[in-house]
Amino acid sequence: MSPFAAPVAALQMLTRLPAPRLPAAPTPAVIATSSVFYPAIGAVLGLLGWGAFTLAHQVLPSSLAAGLVLVVLTVATGALHEDGLADSADAFGSQWTVADRLRVMKDSRIGTYGAAALVLAYGLRWQALALTGGLPLVVAQILSKLSIVALAAVGKPVGEGSGGTFARAVRGVHAAAAAAVSAVLLIPFFSWPLLQAAGTVLLVSAFAHFYFRSKLGGVTGDCLGAAAVANETAVLLIYAGAAS
Image (cartoon, rainbow, N blue to C red; front, side, top):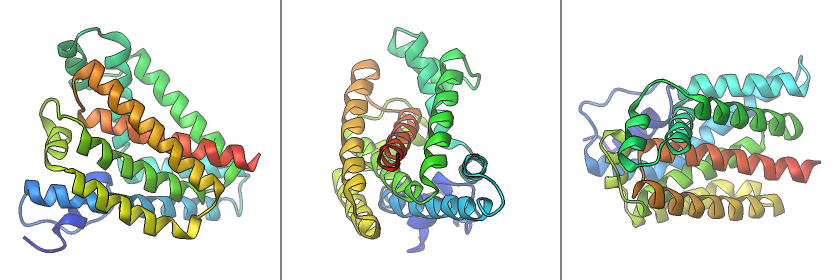
């Protein structure tokens, strides 16, 4: 397979942006290696959001510009992680057994818990972006994508699907490599809020790991998506607090 298969697979997994077609379905080795590029794809999404905010803010107030950023990113990602957040909220909020939680996660319908989680996640990010502008979104996207890799590396995969395949393939060495890539990408953003954000992501990810393990026995793709949204939101709130 092409040496570019891994970054292309990462782009295809995390976004709906145009990407070259792979000659064959990614192998477990390619899927594992693709995780190293997740923070870089996050940086691309963050820069896309920053650019959208900068352009929109030329003619619109910051609140509307921030709303348009979320529209752009939702289209660019296909609301992949938000779907995971909604499914996880419905499953953990309404069910009491592992089997029922997994059943709800596979259900395409959205319930009250999922709807509430989406409203809160979008609302908090919208307000934070309105206060900070689009630049902190780059940090939020990098760290949230790193959290996906870290949780997949330490969590036991539960169920089938692309999330389970990803979690089965990723190992600690891939998470360490993704962390190194993140560190390099974040050098231009070094600041006290960045250190706070990194520490917060570590805490949120650790909580998510233990929570998913206790409630589900491991992680699914929906769990990884939910954690990514939680971490992205947490980072933006850190920067919003620093800006206020």
